[in-house]
Length: 132
Image 1: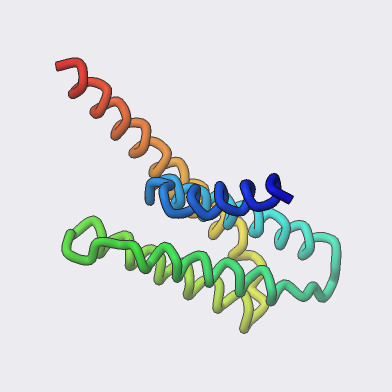
Image 2: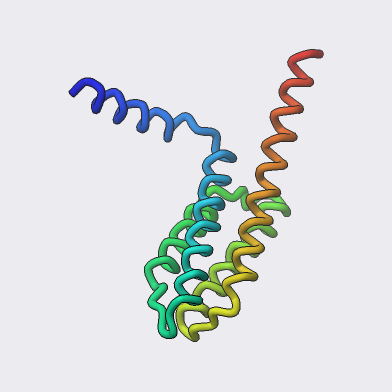
């Protein structure tokens, strides 16, 4: 009984204390997994129903869009990239353009890699500034 409550408290605390960059990387990695599953579904079936995975992907994109700093040029460019990804997801859903999935997956992986590199650089800067 206490273990279950401790797990719930830990999970709630972890969510509120996780750095935003880690959350963004997790979302992008989850998007990559969902895209891989959707691609597998498309390969296995002649008429796949991937509407639920597409909705999950769009929801994740909206979560990412919500944390963008629109006051910077980089933030605006990132926002436009997220919009382009969302439009591609809509095209996949409406027109069954499954050939777009690999390109979407590639962009999501590139974003995840870029954010991972940014996190690494951020941590290195903190370590170096602590030593000085």
